[in-house]
Image (cartoon, rainbow, N blue to C red; front, side, top):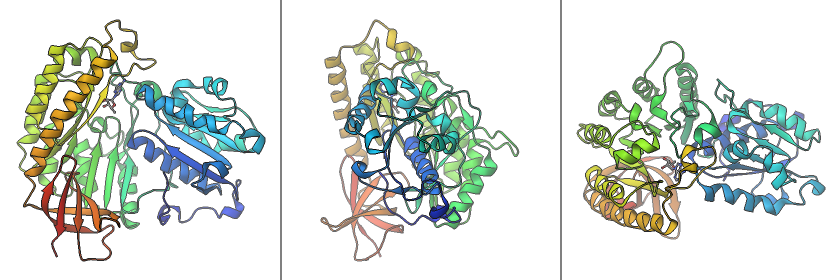
Length: 457
Ligand code: 5AD
């Protein structure tokens, strides 16, 4: 969802009056991961630069866009439910567009299923959006931007960021890992790293516009390699970004265990501005399952990586993704995943039931786990993890933590923000305007998913 914030990034754009779509409105809704959220910020920037104005009412928008997710079946289905509401769009002279992973996955089949859709565009084709929008505006009915034959990233200087002080920055797009459960290589294409020059220039522009936190994004962010001189490593890029004047926090997500090296831990240890949080999806605690998933590491190798993280001089919070009920996952395999939860002591877990996806090898496998069994395993895992998080968060009571304030609950009289470790903290304060500020909060209570405290002045 877009919120109205100062459009710092739009300075210098063509005036709306002279743009092709002057006066037309767009509604853009986003599903899925942070990459999608950030892609939508870039798409919104392109639309604004053409003279479109944002609206929060899909019923009144001239152009309705859904930026879609197909990581699991449910997410992909949701889009078609939404699309069903716009059958009359063409006769009302309105256009409907499907962007993102469902667009790439389903391609022109979307026109068969929802003939009122007139633009289908995958993320690897966003560079072509101006041309595709020209054709749409000229009245063409079935415009497509599909195909993954790309070796570039989507560079635009008109990004319309939703958040006033925390900014996403794409550093690597696509994925080459080809895990047997995952659609990403077929929806986002091959891995492409952006050069360090443009990345650091973007960080400097963001700092100049008042942003203090940047979050580097990539499906496998730590496999970033500088394609040009000076040939930085990922950890060196983190350090360079942290040195940009005005930048107080540098985050990054999502790391792949195979690419995660000790130099990243060292960078976090040495540089307070690099956030003390690593999101390191394990997917399963069983080497047998990991092999079938084609994750390219064993349980033991993963445990070694997390012991490296856990032994850092700075406490680093660790979160993960887990899939339960992957084809062939036995009760013993699942027990190994539960055991890994204990050993890792995660600060947060996103857990999912395996969902068979098109264009992935595991879809065809005959040893699928029955749905009720997947549900049982998921519930067990989440309950165990809930206890672990309560225990871990309770250890924060009595500490004073720095929080970047990003919201206010009027009804509860509380501010909310995040620590460097990415924990949510709700707190009271006599101050009247804290948004965007870094404040010291004394922690007094802890739940599984958040902390409560008081602002120490
Ligand atoms: N089924 C269930 N979960 C999946 N994920 C990716 N593909 C699937 C799938 N087919 C999960 C993984 C990944 C997260 C973003 O989504 O845990 O890390």
